[in-house]
Amino acid sequence: MAIEAPLPPEQRQPLLVVGEALSRYSGLVRFVVRFPWMLVAAGGLMSARMTASITGDLIRFARAGDWLVHGDLAAIYAGSWMQGGPFELIFSYGLLPAPRQHVAQYYIASEGHLIGLHAVLGVALMLCLLWGVKHLRCGVGLARSRNLEFAVGLVALLDLLPKLMWQGGHPAEIGIAAFWIWAGSLAVRGRPTRAAIVIGLSTGWEPWGLLAAGLLLTDRRPRQLLLNGAVFAVSAVLPYVPFVLTGHFALFDLTWPIAHGTLISVIWPHASSFTWLMRLIQGAGSSMAAGAVVLALGRRRDTVWLAPLAALIVRLLCDPLDLGYYWHPLLLLSLVGVGFLHGSCSLSRVSGVLALAYVPGLYLSARLPWVNGDVLLFAALVLVVVLVVLIRREDPESLGRSPSELGSSRARKDSNPEAGNGSS
Image 1 (tube, one colour):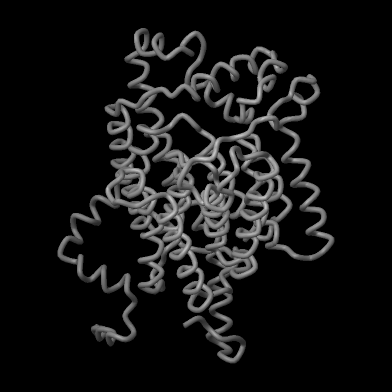
Image 2 (cartoon, rainbow, N blue to C red):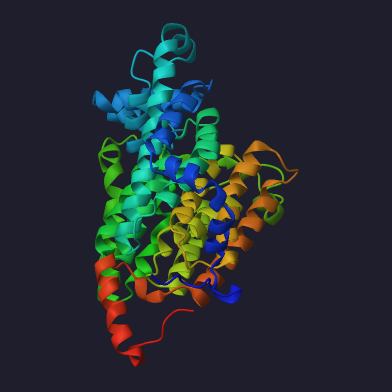
């Protein structure tokens, strides 16, 4: 049997080079990768031992969820403080069911329950990530990769879980990012109306879920775009209609303080508060950023995570507050990007995606003397680099097609080389 000659250096892909460098550990690596459940178990154990504080926000969300479950809709948005959507309230109530909606009572009466709750959340998050990466790759025409599933799980174990458990309290930060990924997957597979429904319903977690509306530009036919816009608008309003009908709906009466050192404090140095009009401007900028990514990438597979990521970076840049949990969706979206890496990726793309995955972790851990604006500008720069690499080097023909469809398409190209040009 003939032995294949090694590829010349100029034809070797960066991930192949890395794989060869790690070949001495191949037996151990193959063993670990074959059993992803070990990461799930480790996530549960790690989460159980974390002493996360139950935040005051989560307590209030859970109390409002109790009102919602028992039909007292008028009390939930009677004051302007409540900005959590009904999905977040129900989820929070599931975490802290009555009568454990007071911090002291919760810790005194249910220490064991707290440990069990953390373990269950850790296991659930790890399972959802590993299953999600597998499902997303298959949905957009990539074969399953146990190696990348393991990479996503490992980064989540070392970075995402500690951030969530030690600085949580807002389930919407993960819920909205998950809905955006879901919508992006539908959009690149040619199902824009379903994507419009999912993006609209993401406001049921918190109103800023609508910032990913730029994903609707994956289908720019005028009639279809108009239809998708109408479906999105109805879906975005629908979760709040029952509360509006009570006549006690003060959600839009809130104004936010402007923290010193944020970009907003530089742009409007004399502004004392951030109003909902400013929120609309912020939302328009975020949606345009997502739309710009869609226009640049079309229905390439990486639109699934890069378009929402662009919307999120603009949101953080233009936000009047600098709160740690704002970074959780950025980390989750970056982890999905890691899961979308494949053998033909350039070294610059691999480096860029990994940098995006670790930016929020470094900032939240305060390991580097950066301020919020520096980190976000760095993230925006890396995002642009990743986009340029994708536009120049990635194959645009993989648009939401199954592996079998891609195989037949490549077979046709092989039989007729002049039918189209391949990717570099």
